[in-house]
Length: 607
Image 1 (cartoon, rainbow, N blue to C red):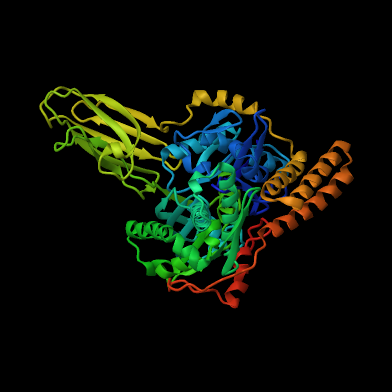
Image 2: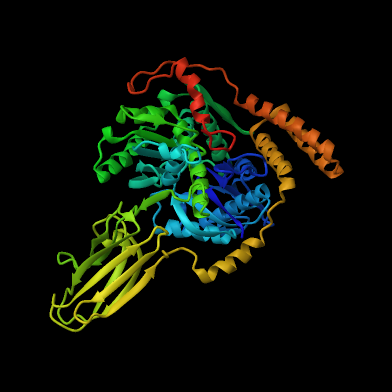
């Protein structure tokens, strides 16, 4: 039997982990890195690039490359790459397949099953699409785990010998990634980890800050971001990302972006970032208030705030949270890795590993599940009758009774919706079943409806006609715009036709993609030199001399690193801005505390 791995399928980066030798370990990809960018590029001949290579091609081949597609899982959105259309779950399947191959190489044995993390606020369609992506990649995915739940597992220090001695605590898990925000309240006691409430925003993440910076850059340089071609947009966005990352360590930086036709720059600071993206900070705190309200908790009840996701490295984000959570201990133990390490722990739990098989992790239903009922005031718009309220602990089973709405009614339709809106049509439709009832006057016939929802996201609907005792039931486990089971084999065969480059070639291809990106950004003599270096690498590859290739790759990597630094260089010029009193520039002592980010290091969950 093959191994079970844990996968953090992220908007910006994805990671894999496994429970091994009593701890959760990150799995390196073929380039020796833990973070695999969630980017896919497909050429006209069907050749597929996944990860860092594809990320480099965002600038050189934007029309063949897609990123941030996780945001649209379970929707009807499509991407056209290499002359074909792909849904987000199909692109995600290519990322999962890459992680699966890397895991098999690392473990030296087949990997047949995976536990995949998703944002807690993913709806039914997005969760089903994630399972579809797993099936398309050749992985069996029986269990989907919420990202904050995984982070809580990692934060509790499971894998340490004394983990069961952890005290009773309430965690606020603030999971802020590249594309989504999840906030969860987690109650922990000994070996029990219980999710108390979740909230979030599936369209708020670090990439929104990138866009805000890019748009400000364009305004200051008399450009209109939305009217630029894809290639120039990606060049500016790449500059925005570099500037945003620089602000995690410095208070001020210079953002620069250039191609063959323009070279511009912009002064940027953390204070300026706040000013141009204040609307994002306002949106950020809404889910925090929501989970506290739903769980009936106060700020003082929180033992620890756990920061998860790469966007939590931003000092502006941390200080904004401290404004609302002043008395809470804030913990950022390598935000990039925590979800993956937690999913790795859960893969060990699922394997019934002796070290952690007694851990009990409960989850909750993130959205209300209900049915439509007759609206006397507006007959054309049924209203939502909740049966399972959001934040109900899973598995759960709830019952409600309904009566006929009209005289001589002979059928009652029980439709199933997910969401919080008053009118059912504003919520997400999941399915329906019709139940025959005896003909009678209005209100004289009744049915009892029971919803049973399990931790794997499968909903069983039971309907009993009270007067006859007749029972009808149906399993609801699919949403619209997802792949039906009978279609999976056909999709798998289609994806198998795509040509994934062997791992031995990835280093060469990554360097070529890097060089092509630098070539596009540079001008003059530097551009000519980059072109010559790429030609030399191609010459070495044609010679098939492994030692010469390795030497050439090392020199080329050093040159490209120097070229990247050169293109980013600019003189710092800064004029202090006023306002935003909640943000304080970091002291030297705070800057020296960067070690908080590497408490989990080297891919191991350590004490």
